[in-house]
Amino acid sequence: MAHNVSDVGEKQIISSLIMPLFRSVADTVEVGVGDDAAVIRVSADLSLALTIDRIPQDLVAYKLGLMDEYHLGRYLVSVNLSDLAAMGAMPLCILLSLCLPKSFSMDALRGLLQGAHDRARASGASVLGGDTKHGTSLNLVAAAVGTIPSGSALTRGAANPGDLLFCTGRPGLFGMALAYFLVAKPSGLALPPSAESTLRSKLVSPQPKTAEGCLLRLTGRVQCCQDVSDGVSQTVRELAAASGVRCVLDWGVLREIGGEEASTIASHCDCAVEDVLLGPGADLELVFTARPDAREAIEGTMRERGVEVHVIGHCEQGEGTAISCEGSQTADRHRGWEHFGKLSDLSALRNLYKRPRG
Image (cartoon, rainbow, N blue to C red):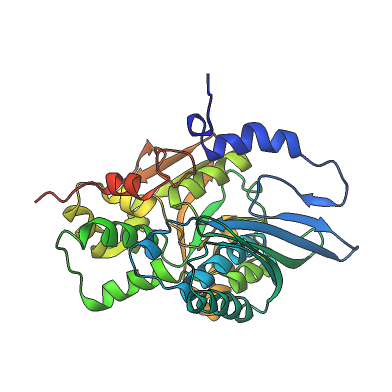
């Protein structure tokens, strides 16, 4: 019998306790608990998307000294904007809740607030205030509100068998950065400067795909979407569960997206390339589904806007997730970040990538 939250894990807490308890019956609630954001209808034509998120005090890039307080503020707002992007919502405003130790310097606070301001403004939103309190450790929370035409929100639960599984950008890049900066680089691996710069940028300043989310909604060809905030494998697993389908990832495509750097990092560590590309990672890319006959139109629309899109798999009858490689399928095991779970802190991440072989 489970006695503590660590015996259960974040995802099961949400599905078995939070969702049944807080399931709304109000007819103004279009999307309730269990998605990237809640959606509430405020008029016949307009709905609001609402989300709230916290970033951990042991955020990897911050703990490693790769991220300053300015980028910490950007990151805090970015993870919330990414939830709005997954719903196809246009960002409206941000609220901040900051719990700061007495030793937190004013220069650090200025940087944090400026980063939050700049990230919000870049997406067309404003920081409207919030709450500031004293605490024994740094605790940063933000909430985001976005607008969306009523009845048009993208959700995790709208995928169907036969759909293609798409992803924006380069999914798995954040995981590559984690493995590189946590284990591979400290143990002697040195990637070319351009490759290291790309990984550092992804780890320090991932970009929420707010414009892309709205564009997907406007195509009229996409109804199912989720942002990659806990890793590619975890994201697809949650989408499959919400939609009642089986998602099959095309390992050949994902491996090609990762490039030679993924193999180099994995070979330097005692871990599989799958753990690097599919494991924990806040890529903030968007995974979405659409019918095969919509592929050309979607790819063309995104290409016109300069958005990189890949078909990384498909949906079929069944449940769970699988990885397809050279015509055969194997069940995908749980790999993603999960609060209270096995992969929920820095030491666990280091153990995932283990020690270099020598």
